[in-house]
Figure 1 (cartoon, rainbow, N blue to C red):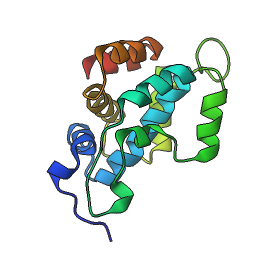
Figure 2 (figure 1 turned 120 degrees about the vertical axis):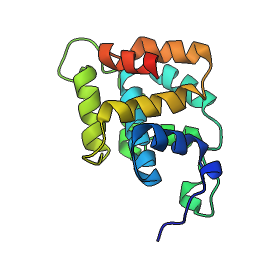
Figure 3 (figure 1 turned 45 degrees about the vertical axis):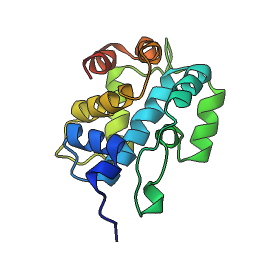
Figure 4 (figure 1 turned 90 degrees about the horizontal axis):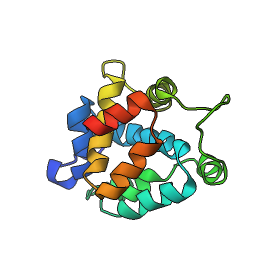
Length: 159
């Protein structure tokens, strides 16, 4: 059974939930992790580390210990193998089969995140972007923007 989560205890994920149209904070957490995973796949390890360093803030305070984490913990991949590979492989940009364009970015978020069918994937991505940008310096916001593909960059800029 899930513990009720008060709004004031869940600032980051509450922002995501509210702006995304998701009805469940656990969905907000799961989809945020996937958005972060795809974002990390686009950038160098050094950039990802700089983003993580700025995300060291409590995401939630709750009696449910599974939800007590820093926003930086959301940035880490919950799959150890995927997390390791994301640190040793080059960014997935440029020519080739693994290039992540805007369509692939949004496809991965919708499919890897178990997104409910009644929500708009672009709205969810924009909600995660908005909550994330609230935690970052202008320099980091600009650096992330430089790694994102065209349509996703537009969502980032609008968030």
